[in-house]
Length: 200
Image (cartoon, rainbow, N blue to C red; front, side):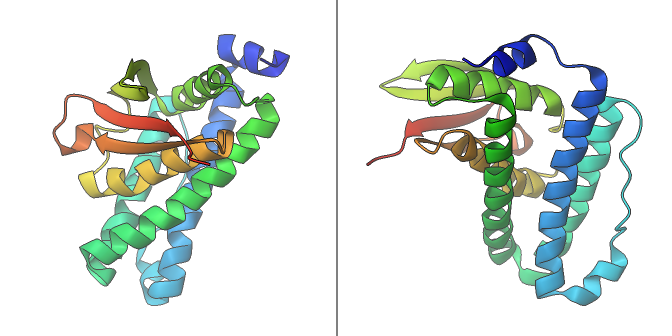
C-alpha cells in the first residue's frame, strides 16, 4: 500500500473532502447534462445549470443528490423509463471509470484487493457511505449499511448513479467489477453489491 493511500485512509482534512465531493458532483452532473444536450437540448433551459455546493458536507451531498434527481427525472420524462435508465447508466459508468482512474493515480492504488478496499472506503467516505465486505461462495459481497445519499435520492436516480460507483471500482482496478443487486432506495435494508474478478 502506498504512503499516500495509507495517509488518506487515516485522515483527510475537511477542505480536501469538500474539494473531492465538488469534483464528483461536477463530473456526474455534467455527464447527465451532456445526455440532455444530445437528446433534448431544449430541456436544458428548464434545469438550473448553476447548481451550488455550499455549506457542510451533508448540505453539499444533499444539493448534489437534488441535482441528480432533477436530471434523471427529466431524462425519464423525455426518453421513457427504460431508455433513460440505460443511457444514464452507461454515461455514469464512464464518468465513474474516469473518477476511479483519477483516484488510482492520486492515491497510488496498487492491484491488490486490499488497496481497492482502502481506496473505496476513502471515496465512499466522501459521499457519506459506510460498508462492510464479506466473502460468500468465493465472491466478495459489499453491504452498504449507511448511505447519506439514500434519504435524498429517488429510486431511479439511485439506479442511474450507482453505475458511477460500479465504474469507479473498475477504474480503481480493471481486474475487478462490481454490480449492485439491492438498493436502500428501493426498500432494501442495505445496498448489496457483488464484486468479482474480471474473467480473462
